[in-house]
Each structure stands twice: as structure tokens, then as C-alpha cells.
Image 1 (cartoon, rainbow, N blue to C red):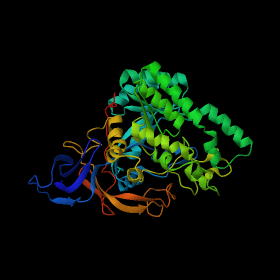
Image 2: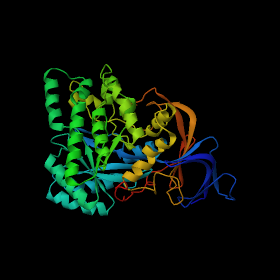
Image 3: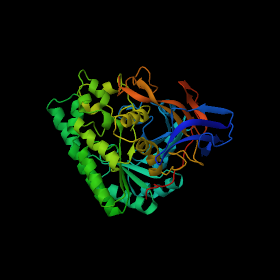
Image 4: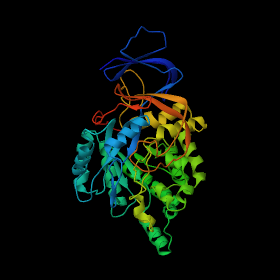
Length: 462
């Protein structure tokens, strides 16, 4: 592999900002030095003057090729990881799914088969446990030994992914014994199903009712219950896609007690709202996801939670379904609209826009998008930072360039953009993954199969 030198950029990590040159050899960052303070030479030199040099993004919540009802998420591991690279993300952690009645091993093997040899960037896997029983509990230590160290449970979707409180407690007890991290979709699914049934009986069938029945209080109640179960089990807890200020308040209260409780939010909850769900002519279906979009007045609480570290991570929950032929499955019945939004390509730019808008500092941007997810899921410092010994997952980022997000120009395999027409300041210029140039000045140079599976250690905040 060629020796690479990146000169003159502002290196921004979660810990510091410094004008420095970055030397890369054999896929690894080997040294940083002040400009002009070294005698380095390289076969390949990138001039980053006036640009940021940042770690590649770590998106710890994606769903490539996820089956949902009668359809499957539209991004494959090939198309989805390519789109991630276009957006400056160089690592994803996707979710293997255990179908009910089968083993964790069967689900994990199925996802390895989907991803192996197809990814443009490096990837890890979480494990969705949809059938908690004595057999699957016994499987957990073996998966941890293979680097699958986080297990997702659902308090929602009865009949599909749902686990009751007893099953959740048993999984948390096993996690406490083995060092695993439990990830929780915290919504009261049985109560939501009652509200769905009642809304449909009243003739309330448009997409906006998806948000109205999945009430913020039912997210908060489930979050509170998950925290208390984790306390009983002595287990850490990571609550995914926090959307409601009431749920955030439960996390903040737990963290004030010093509990190992963590929270993630997503760009859609920071930039979109129930106004989008209410768009006419079934356009609101584009914005159906769970947890649902909330009224705009929830957004400031989420931004504040990111600033105060009551929320540690921003992931995308990237789970795209095309409007034509997929979202349209729910015409006349909002409960049949596939749940999920595209976003893996947009996260780094949207969060940089938050820096421009004053919601975040530059270092906090890198913390929540790169370093914290890498630490949370056992990948730091190999991923999430720029330092000697780290993988050379490096992005040259132009903080002054503007561009408009649109389905006409994005690279996700989906026929709409959740952020259509939104102009953002900041754009990826060059992307390196383990020292290989994946993207440079609008030219995609990556390839399927470059991305490697990442066995992960346990959560590094514990």
C-alpha cells in the first residue's frame, strides 16, 4: 500500500483541534506533526489547507436488507455502505436478526452471508433477540467471543420482535454476567397496538396518525421500565432512537444517579417533526419511522441532551423503503406503512450544519458521530479518532462548501430524500478507509469487499 500524507488541515477529534500533517502507512495512522516540523515524503499527498481532517464517521445503528412485514429495506450492504462512504461514514454497525423460533446463530450466519464480500467500508454486527429463551440465553457468551457484544431487545412490535418484562430481565441478567450491552427499543408495544386499533376504527388512517398513536408518554414509560429492569439485573442499558423529551428526562434522571444508562438519538428527530408526517397526499408516509417524529418543540430538549451528555450518540437508524411500491403498502392504513427512513449518507453533514447553527461545537460533533459510538461498541481507538495506531479512516471535510440534499443526487438506493431541498454547509471531499481512497472530489473509487467485518470488544464506558 502506498504511503499517504495529508497536509495543512485542521485535525479535529473529540479531544482536540490542531493544525497538523497526518502520515499514513499500511492502512494505519502512524504519525501527526505540526506543518513544516518534519521531513516526511509520500507517494500520495492530499493538500487539506482550509479544510478539516476528521475521523471517518461511525454509524452504530443501520438496517441494510432488513425484512419488515411484506417487504425488505431497499439498501443492500453494497449500496448502503457505498452511500455511507459518500457521506463520510467509514464504519457501520448493522443488526443481525434472530427470527422467532430459530437460534441466534442462524440469524448471525444469515447476516454474515448478506454482508461478506459486499461492503465498501468496515462493519460490525449487533444481534436482535426476538425470542429470548433458555437456549438463546446460552448462546450469548459464544457470540460475545466472536465480537458480537451488543444485543437488541424490543418492548414494541408484539408478535414480531416483542419481549415481555420477564424475558428482558433474563437477557439483562445474562448481559450483566457476560459484559454484553443491552440495546432497547423502548415503546410500550401492547398499549400502542390498542391505540392503533382504536384509531383505525375511528377512520383515522393517514400517516400522521402513526405519530399520534405512538405517544411520547409510552416511549417515556417504556424507557423508565427498561431502566428499572436494568437496575434490578445490574446491567448496562443503551436506549436507541430517543425521540421524546419525556423519555430523555428518564435517561437524565438515571444518569444523575450514576447508573450505566446511555442514549442515542437520530438526525430525523433533530431536523424533522410531525409537520412532515402531516404532509398531504400520502407524502407523510415518507417520514414514518419508530419511534415516531415528534412535534418541533421536542427538538431543543434533544439538542440540550447532546450538549449535556445525557445523550451520547447520534446514529441514523437507516432503514430505507422506497415511496413507490413500499411505503405505498400503507395507503389507507398507516399501520401497514413500512417503518424507516434513509439517512446514512446525510448524518455527518447534518451534524456539521448543527455546528454552523450553534447547537454543537466541532469537537462535540466528532464525539457524538465518531468517538462515542466507537467507544460505546468496543471499536475505539481503532475507529473514531485520528491518532498513531488508529485505522486510517480519515475524511477531508470542506466546512465552507454548500450543497442541497436531494434524491436526485444522493447515493442511497431509495427514491426520496427525507431532507429534500435542505441546503447544508459542509461537504465531504476525500474519504480514506484503512488508507485506501474510497472517494475523492466527487469520484467514487471504492469497491465491494474492501470493507471488513469488525469483531468488537465490550462497551468501553463500563
